[in-house]
Length: 80
Image 1 (tube, helix red, strand yellow):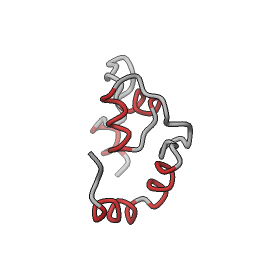
Image 2: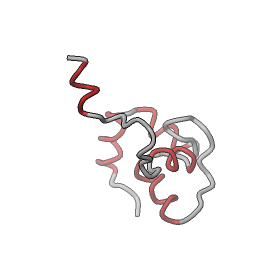
Image 3: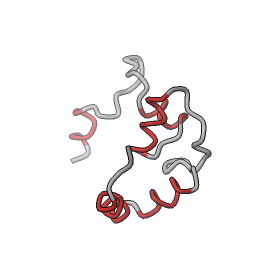
Image 4: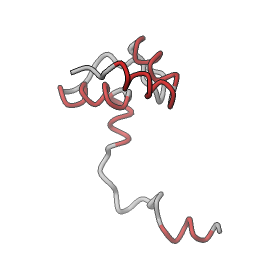
């Protein structure tokens, strides 16, 4: 299912390079090739986010409790 022309126009105002990158089959995050996906869900995600498979894998990776939490409330409040 494709987005309406109104939605595409709105998304272009938010991130003009998104439409250009996706029209060229490129990732909006890394600029790499976005033509191969591991499954239909990942291909569908590209139509939503514009992320290639590698960037999707990184963005949606399970949280590893061993790593520092980038959203740690203590960390960002300490900067204020």
